[in-house]
Length: 367
Ligand code: TXA
Ligand code: MG
Image (cartoon, rainbow, N blue to C red; front, side, top):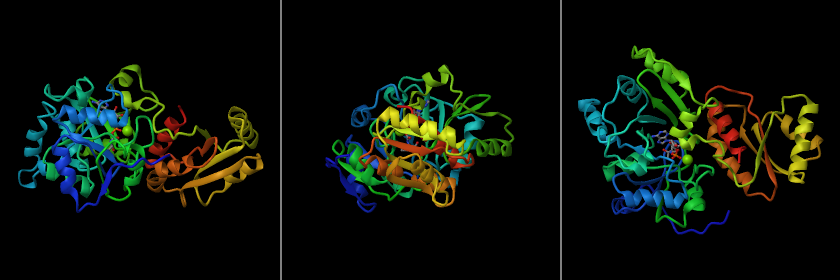
């Protein structure tokens, strides 16, 4: 990936330059605890258009509004926040309030009914809007200094891997934006959980650090008996139309990616490897494995005459949080090698962030 750099990377002590740019209608790379975002003034349509342009993102894919913590003054509890949020959503239901109380600031985006004056560029003309209050101290410092919410999608070109370090933003869109604020490597590493709030149901549209079980537990504590359903895998046409960014073929490296379940029978695995070799007419692969302590995938590739040019592993011993944190960086690393295809070991674990990791790998494999 060539770096045609133009953006200046700012440290967290140089935020005033980023703030001036944002208030003048420019767009800026911003760290969050999940992935880096490309931020712009949510009330300025020309800034919003710059976001779509820099990302080459189609206008039908809506943006998430990032809310400053300063909107949530502890003295008056959530009351001030709820009034401020009315700029975006007319009524916060008790379900939304409960989830805000338990998970904000943090990696949970709520999809709620929109107020009429929210720009169609934010909502893509849908009747809902996505709201999130990020936890990252640098994101919050930036939001607080701007004192306005910032619209921010992940700071990658459309359909590509989300950036988890400032340098990734530079290589993705550095030639199109003036500044990237460096907040260090992202703690979580995959994007926020996206939950759609209906009157009688919560639908998880994107898997992330906040799990369905945690949402269920929170609602139960608040005495709200509403089901939390996963739209993942069973996404029907209505949900797809309502959340276009959930389509497959996202999070893709530039190289093709194939998932292989190395725990299947040796014969079956061999067949899968043969079909990769014949599809790409090459035995040179990059290999992404789940656990450093488990050499099965590596050995199986070697036994089947694959030449593993580049190898990355997501975890030492199988921790889901560690896997998420390393996922996009590892895919970027393998993408840099001269190879024809990346083979990813299918994760065996389903707990915690492994589900989100499997989901991103699945989408990356569907170009
Ligand atoms: O962790 C994150 O959420 C990061 C950081 C920067 O905050 N942002 C992020 O934004 O991942 P983006 O634009 O890459 O992904 C937002 C997803 C998209 O799939 C979009 O379709 C969906 O949220 N979304 C946004 N507004 C929506 C709405 N009103 N209804 C349904 N889906 C919506
Ligand atoms: Mg994205």
